[in-house]
Image 1 (tube, rainbow, N blue to C red):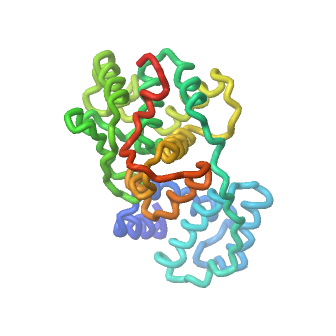
Image 2: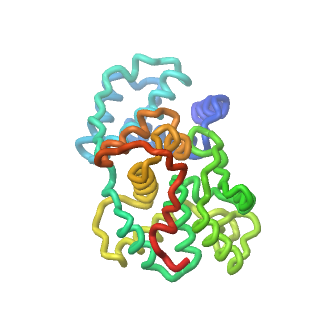
Image 3: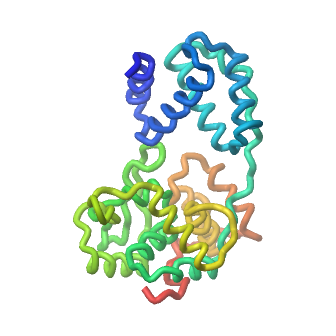
Length: 283
């Protein structure tokens, strides 16, 4: 391991960055180094700007992906190498405000019904019924379920934050049925072969397969279920500040974008609609 890579890892650990951020930032810096084929200490602001032109114009990367690269290189030059001016000529593409194709409740029901595999159905319903990120979904443990309080504990979510998410009666019932059949002891949704936690690619593949089987052509991966959770709860009258807490958003602005996709949103007294029960599935 190079001294620079170790120095960057130490800097990220000192600031409490998640393992996923470690992986993303190190991969971005590795790609940057491969592009220039010389010491990163010798790279100047023109070189960095040219690299982002390459990412946008030649690799055609999305705005969000470019921002991951920007975050990684900014951290490298500002916090590790103490060369903040190296990033000042970077031009990033404007980030679009459109969400991946928003799923209706009928489409979610059709998608989930496309599989008879109880584990896969439980996986998708937990993601949708609790509004989870896929990284949070695969990190769930059996102990995170509090059936008495009807709460799901999400530990070390994005930003290394813990939070409690309401667990509806229908979702809890489905998970109990799943547990009775599969008997997981540690990870809630373990890899069948290794017993370890699933990789995030597995739920993604399950989602895409079910979406194709259901004949749904809307764009986006499994994160669309989290978007659906947010919009459907708002449509039912959930206050935005409560949705912010359940989604684990640091900023209210991140939650407010969903309001624009809900016609005539009126906050009511809804605490948390049982979205899985609303689907009318035979769980």
